[in-house]
Amino acid sequence: MIRFDRVSKRYPPGVDALSNLSFDLDEAQMLLIGGHSGAGKSTLLKLVAGVETATSGSVLVGGQNLGGLARAALPYYRRRIGMVFQDQKLLFDRSAFENVLLPLSISGFPVRESASRVRAALDKVGLGKREKALPIMLSGGEQQRLAIARAVVGRPDLLLADEPTAHLDQDTAADVVRILLEFNRVGVTLLVATYAHELFPGARRLQLDHGRLAA
Amino acid sequence: MKAWLVHHGRSASLAWRRLTATPVNSLLSLLAIGIALALPAGGQMLLSGIRDLAGNSTATPRISVFMNIAAERAVADNIRSRLERHAGVRQAGFLPREETLARMKSSPGLRDVIDALAANPFPDAFVVSARDESPESMERLADEFRKWPQVEHVQLDSAWVRRLDALLKLGRTALMLFAGLLGGGLIAITFGIIRMQVLTQRAEIEVSRLLGATEAFIRRPFLYHGLLLGVGGGVMAWLLVIGTTLWLRAPLAELAGLYDLNLALHPLSASDSALLLACAGCLGWLGALFSLRQNLGQG
Image 1 (tube, chains in turn cyan, green):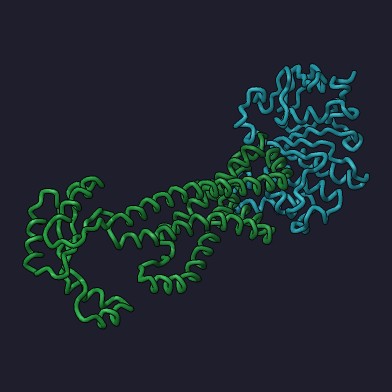
Image 2 (cartoon, helix red, strand yellow; image 1 turned 120 degrees about the horizontal axis):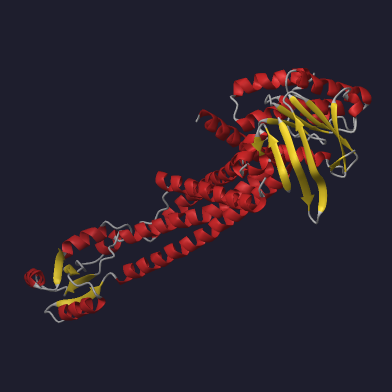
């Protein structure tokens, strides 16, 4: 599903966020990316999401080399992956329903099908009864679950999550992890950047240290 | 095709929601655009009224030849024959003094004055159109007619109409310049409003890009917003022009009546109204487009 082949990413004025990184992740598998702050976890996710491009090496997702992806094709690529952001990036002037509807509107889904999909996604994360609530009315855990619902409503093959349990208490974090694992169990490939690897027992882990694989 | 239409429908609906989310601000913006558009639209309507006034006369140069008041009809007939045979004359119309008297009597306010006179004060007259309408040729013809027997007075009639025509041309040119400037103003207003919208919606734009929105998808609601501002401003301008027309119609009619002029303000025609709305919509859309190019950046 994902192949990193000697990938490096350098930001001006010469800061190496990732250096010569290689790994593979098969379909329907899960991989945790660990490491201290600034280790390169978010950069790795940004490369997979097509937000950044590698300075050298190749990033392949679903057999497609993202380095060769035309700018015009990038939006269509992003529709195939789900993303959960560390800061959630929810729209605070839209209801929970409208937030989850956004990816489907972008993809041009028919209105009727969109509504049922949004409700199914909200039910899946336990927010079925809060569809009219604005994000500001939701707790931190609920906001994170809402972000997950938005990431999965388009039924992506690949789900990227950047620190999905950050700023959550232990019970809420466990709840969020349970939801992510459920999606992985039904075949969604999961790539998670997290400090809290203990919440994902038995998961394969890639430890980064200053942009390199830690020994 | 259906998905494309759904996208457009959603974008238009979103633009409408954004426009109505701040009703006072939007109303003031529409008023500013409306006033900017009403000025050239009103100017066009005023020029149209003046053009109608000039249209009652002809802009074709003509020469009026007035006979001596005491001249016999036979002399006038002789002059008519000479005029009709003249190589430089294209057309010569005869105005018998009785007809002139009757027409003047029908003019309001003149009947009493004319009735008080002992005899018909008007002479027989001819209205002459020349083949060569150049000022020099017209002057030569007028000089020639002045020398004919029993011709009392010869007058080049069209000078004031030509002056009015020249003034109308100047007015139209000035109006176009004015409309261009105010159109630029409308674009600037829309540019600023859309810039503010882009700044306000920065988070949504960023999220939409991350979720796979194309640039067209992101731009569309803003373009509809600009279009709605333009068309809304156009409607406002139309209402202002119509309101002003109705307000001024009665006093203007009274003034025109006093001077026996056919000067009236006609409301904008359906085609002029459609043109106003179309131009306003295009200018709003253009303002939004320029603003997006400047402020949206690339994902």
